[in-house]
Length: 180
Image 1 (spheres, rainbow, N blue to C red):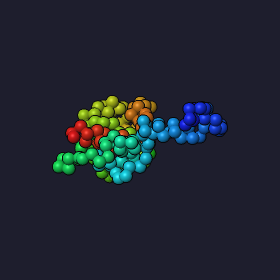
Image 2: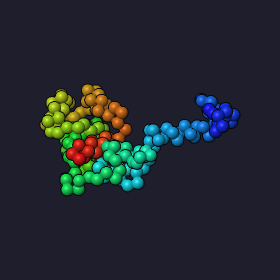
Image 3: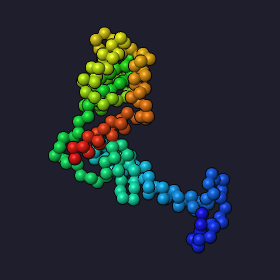
Image 4: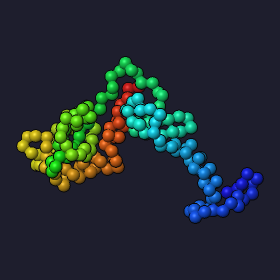
């Protein structure tokens, strides 16, 4: 890398995969941050989805979950966006497949060990899943015996998803953005 005068830098490179001194590595990192943004805590919770994680660009912040620009005005006269989800809960050796438009409230009322996944969908999607896994259904309830097919389906839904709640937050933000 050239120095300020146009000649070679000449500073020592310390055990780096590139021939860059620490000062030039810092310049490259700073340039990268302006192009890619820096993930950090938002100054306040996202108004669209409630997430606290954001990405800071030179032009401003966006929510990392739903990409809503921080400071953008939501139409407060509208009700909160509605996103129906099919949820998959594990309790001991059973899995519950249910649906709701208010997952935090609904899941708080159901005894479970783990939230496995969310799938965007309403009662029709829930009914299709109940039919799909009918062979492992317990009586006529929404509880199913864990089977390789059911676990594979949940694995596909949760592939690349670290936290199902972050995915739900993104869907809420998308719904809010679509309605303006």
